[in-house]
Length: 331
Ligand SMILES: NC(=O)c1ccc[n+]([C@@H]2O[C@H](COP(=O)([O-])OP(=O)(O)OC[C@H]3O[C@@H](n4cnc5c(N)ncnc54)[C@H](O)[C@@H]3O)[C@@H](O)[C@H]2O)c1
Image 1 (cartoon, rainbow, N blue to C red):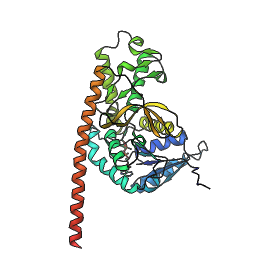
Image 2 (image 1 turned 120 degrees about the vertical axis):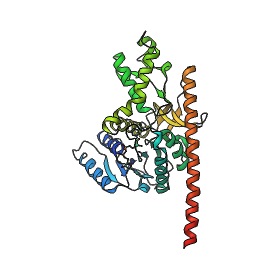
Image 3 (image 1 turned 90 degrees about the vertical axis):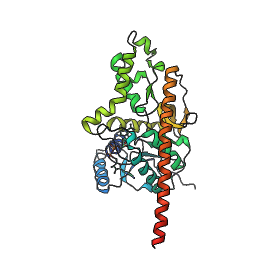
Image 4 (image 1 turned 135 degrees about the horizontal axis):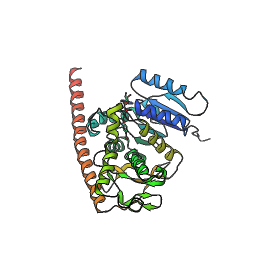
């Protein structure tokens, strides 16, 4: 009889602020039988597993938490990558690239061989660039490698519009697209407040100053929180848990998510239908002329960062080979 997989598992690489908050959210809103935590800081890993397990004993969840290796994680249904350095106060997401790219590369070496059906969800920053390299390094199909991208920025946008319009965020369709970073943009022309385009829902208010105020809020929200508490965790923990649910339950939910855009040559956030196989299909969105220009500028900026990172990876490989050759000479 063919072996049947009865467990559903989500592996979380990195159990710092974001990874542990995601694990906690998955315990409270159970969608899988097992959460596997992986972190090279073994004392932290053990403590997080014990503390999170304590939260399961009340009996309101069937989800269990355990520590695992990178190799175990590579067999999970979903692997969420939160491993990596985070921004210090005033630091940009892009400044993390070099450190987090090296961590990503070591992760794929230790996870191999990766389950060919696994869905990879990148959360570590800079998330769009890491999503691009994760697809190359993992060898998984493009549709199975996604980044949380502007899901959180879009939720923040819905939050601020909910306050302005006095309508629940759930009744608002509004997308921040592009980079989860400074070149992101708001697709103003497609915002719907309930059934109304935003220009009808907020007549006379949609001025350039209003748009700039909201865009600045959305773009700067993470930095403002980090300045006071050193990290952001609850928002992203919740968003990542929701993305896992759309995938495991094959929910076909439309969200802005970072994935490879063949016509733009990079990963960035555009609306997509999410389901059990990851990106089921891109969801077309009509952008006006300004938004289209913003999208192209954003992609050109991300392609530039990717080109720089590719050079760094080539130089690293050359150095690695030279060191190996040197070591062979010595022995
Ligand atoms: N995409 C988003 O919207 C979003 C939001 C918040 C934070 N982030 C990013 O998420 C990342 C994590 O943030 P945090 O606040 O949890 O940081 P943190 O420092 O609290 O935790 C990171 C953890 O990763 C672990 N780690 C390092 N190398 C590892 C490896 N090879 N395998 C497994 N674990 C490894 C570290 O030991 C550490 O415990 C950062 O890059 C941060 O910028 C993204």
